[in-house]
Amino acid sequence: MPDIKQQISELRASALKELDGLSQAKELEEWRIGYLGKKSRLTELLRSLASLPIEERRELGQASNVLKTELEAVFKNKEHQLRCGELVAAGEMMDVTLPGRPFPAGHLHPVSQVLSEISDIFAGMGFQVVEGPEVEWDSYNFDALNIPPEHPSRDNMATFWLDSPPKEPEGWRMLLRTHTSPMQVRTMEQVAPPVRIVVPGRVFRYEATDATHLAMFTQIEGLAVDRGISMADLKGTLFEFARRFFGADRAVRFRTDFFPFVEPGAEMAIECAVCRGGGCRLCGGSGWIEILGAGMVHPRVLERAGIDSTVYSGFAFGIGIERIPMLHYGIDDIRLFYSGDLRFLKQF
Ligand code: PHE
Image (cartoon, rainbow, N blue to C red; front, side):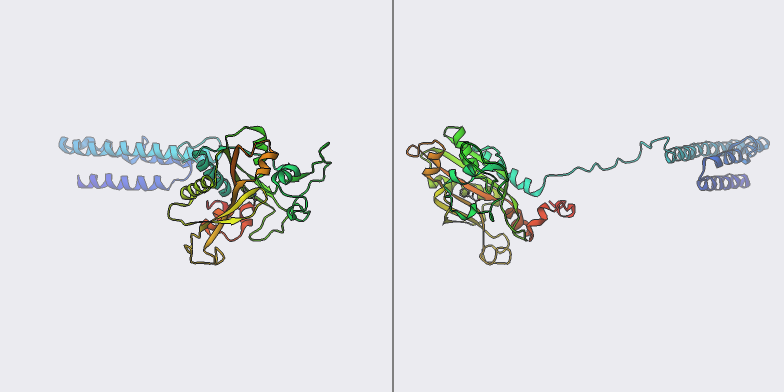
């Protein structure tokens, strides 16, 4: 009897080992005949049990049947595996058990991310988000903003003028807007106060490209016009923006500056994130990062847009967008944003 037991276990071992070694569906049949067929060793073994005493017959019979069931099951598995594998390889079947291929989903460009975050903050303070044309008349880009004809920014070396006929009868000339401020005028012409808008968008300057300059970059303009708007409203709004965007622990610096379309004019800077005001390479040693120009809308700009400057006043600001992620992440070359290099873009 131990002899038969031994045979069963040897048979099992060799059957499994051989089956495991099969790599083609056409080899299966030989294995099946050899181990499970009518003339197989297992069948012979089962037959030989008939001559044994009843007790042994029962025990060994059971063991042989367990082996038979097991071999049938592993055979089925292997058969399925090999046949499916061949069909999949031949392109006739799809293996639905394979994990799915990851779907390459993109994400917003870092500049778009900052723009929408800033737009959200101002929307939360009651500002509407509007957009304006990138191709603009010089009248809106300059004249209506109190920028006189002799101003250097109107020079051919500073602005992209379009080679198209002037608008008649006004004689306006077409250009790529150099800032988002013309939307101040367009909006005031269209809607009566109270006005509260922010204008995200691209602007263009005829500039030699280097690590800190591009001929195309991004701004977000802000404008609020109503009765009784004061410099305190401007400061309060911008400080609240800085608190929400940069965090309550970053110091804010507010200084006078000049822009022809505001009076008084101001500039706002944020404490450098890296040196915290001590001065480092990132902030050029000053400890501060200038992020926006602002001021009270010049009465001439209000009047030119058809708003009575004795009744209404307003404030405006223009934020440079690319500098914000540059300084936040320590990006030292502005050209990276528009080089289309996924190794750079995927980091944000
Ligand atoms: N338009 C100005 C610029 O591009 C920024 C600015 C906007 C300043 C609004 C004051 C008010 O530099």
